[in-house]
Length: 393
Image (tube, rainbow, N blue to C red; front, side):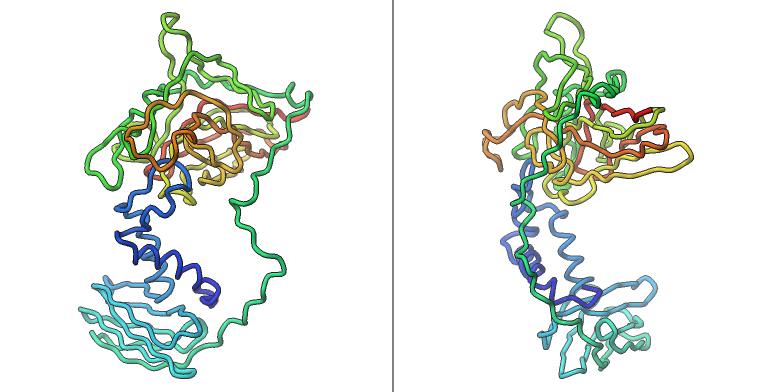
């Protein structure tokens, strides 16, 4: 929008922002609750705040610096609009267009200098320090008309996710399995019982007490798991009752109050690798989809590093619902009872699993270590296993 293509984005804004602000409650009214994992909360500020920014800062172009008694205004309104207005506690303005000239009437409770531009490439003026300002400016050139696409756009969720090629016999012989059991800090049952503070609450509650989040249990299971693409993982497993202490089987990481688990972990590697697979059993909140929930940092000899963002639903999903487009689901654990009789997904859709996520490596350089970070509230990154494909000698 700030590049002058408001006409391109207005249909999307009219749909998303309009539904967010005109629904019967703040937020987007659970409109994305089926985008994966648990239920959307109409009272969550997470669903409301981005739309507020795109309306105030994007559409009306307000960039406040009122603590310095300054205010920047450069609207990005559709080309067929002739008038618009916005009112907030800190600034209000009316906008009218007549041909190639636009008039602003701007008000602020406290005196402020207004730096006003009539759209991208338009005239700019700076007012005096005052509470009310009236300015008239000449519009800048409009963006060229959009050319219709030759092919209709296909929504991503209509395209089946790519199916990874199975490993060859030679590649299976070069797999390096990492034993993460000593680093695991929770069992599956402890994972969903860990208490966090959701945005709508004022005290920590267990993960599985959120609307529609089921319990997770780990039955007796072997330590070695194989994904459908042939990648083998070494996990903590679960011995039968009475045959030993219940081992921790997940390395849980979170940047989420009250911070009961670490926010990151580093795993030493010390060899050249072609590829890396992380076996992730995580929790993500629907309001946090399309945001980086975590990062994988590959650190190489010589100081080079590469970062992969973990963003649901592209390469990260939830322990009871598979929707990651890049991850290969691996059955892990069992879904227990749902916390409430009301859930946003049918119980038949629930599937306890981890995702085998492939990350490409620089096979020329020695991979010294891998850092896994949790970067988002209302998300927990769980690592159950890690396997690398050693580079050819």
